[in-house]
Length: 321
Ligand SMILES: [Zn+2]
Image (cartoon, rainbow, N blue to C red; front, top):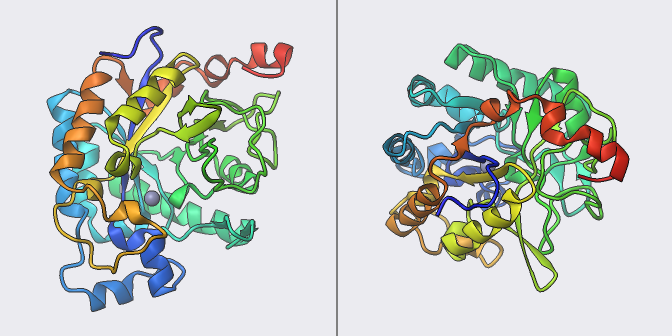
């Protein structure tokens, strides 16, 4: 399939976390990312970790290099697993010190001050760098709950890119009422916001792809959507987004888990409980097969140069890419 027409890359990424990092578990256990009590109260809590090797296999079979966004506290507990990702040649990036959201999409308020966020993110990066022995320059916000002030802090910390912004009509996980002027193409955000800016800066945002149908924009980067909607929606969104620029695909090892998650069902996040295991693994494989030959990790895509990637000249002339 390969999703013609243009030769833009599909950036493959894996968010490495477990079921207890998700918002449903966090709400039930009610802490700011401290998972110690979950680990102490649930026998054999690890569901995602056994499937990390399945993720590595899916990529190795197709000779694909990807970016692995690790929750730092998870990496600290399973350092050999992180090192297996690094040894396979994949990029290691940051998915927070814990998975607790830094921003509350319901109240539109920060859960941490910018100083707390910077301190914790710097600590997370150090943990990951010490474990993999390489620089870590990429960030993805836990739950994709992202705000403009977070991007400013990431730039101040020296991160090269973020990939958290999800433009869609179904939900808004940001502090922007509307992500005006943002499509699925990489861009330089204006300071203090998630919106597209007109000035090149030290941080690039790689927003997630969306599929437009009947005027609606539907997130199609992957993740839990693979459980519910299947690979068709993801491939349709990737096909549209590749016309605009590089497009992002992501999944979690825990998406392939065959066992039941040890939480009661909740209508708040029903996708967590549906269509799991081998079915999802097959869907991930289908997407990877479809994009074979045109994939890359974030650090490879950035090598072309941020200004070229973001089309800064065109942006200045037309107000958008
Ligand atoms: Zn996550």
